[in-house]
Image (tube, rainbow, N blue to C red):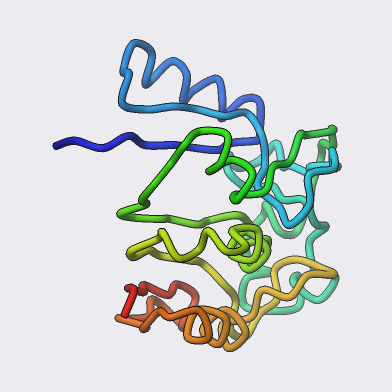
Amino acid sequence: EEGIVYAFEPEPKLFGKLVEKFNGNDKVRLFEQAVDIDENDKTFYSSDLESGIGSLYHLHPELVNSEAGIYECYKQGFHNSYQVKCTRMDTFIEREGIQNIDMLWIDAQGNDLNVLKSFGDKLSIVQQGRCECTNIVPLYDGIDNYYGDVAAFLLKNGFERLETGVENRKISYIKV
């Protein structure tokens, strides 16, 4: 049986592209909001240079002095800011009546650990997933999204790491 994909995108231009791409597909449900540890509206920052470079957090001030600083989008920083609605995953799961999550993919631009924490006691319904984090170069300022902390959180909550990606920035995990 095919499942349903729930996708969150707070950036209006990207959300519009997703709506166009999946228009009429009843297996994909799109939400123009961010996922966070709390449900207050927040400021979202984005770049005009590259689609998908945006976050609830400012870029880290030392980013331009790191190996990632060669990219123009990081050199120039964010150009736009606007208010976005935020939801917690446990609230969303209750509202949608979700009983099981076969695969969870988190790429929340520095907010990934907070997304995991927003599941509360609903994290137990996640079977496996993938989560981005940082290992050496902090991309965003004022947020803990380090590999060791994400891995420790997953281990503490009954998951086992399967593999890591380039420079340990992506963690694939499965329920044990």
